[in-house]
Image (cartoon, rainbow, N blue to C red):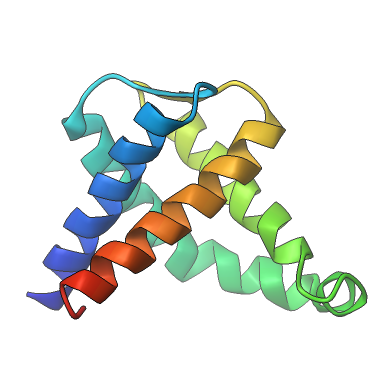
Length: 112
């Protein structure tokens, strides 16, 4: 049950981010659900590998390189899911931050 609620929270965060930021476009809430699924899978499988191999960059930049990793994974999700697009890498960075903040707020409100 926890996974489904977290998945829905992330889908709402993606959908809200697309309406907040001009450089991120989404066609429907169904596409947001698919993006949340792809992001969940990519964050579980690919992100740890990226983080492991970029530890020196993460240390030198005091963790800011994690924003680059999150933006790359968000752009990958945009490339995979039809109906979801990002205009540039800058919008991907901003989108990853906004998605994280919205997910955190919703998770805190729902105690998940």
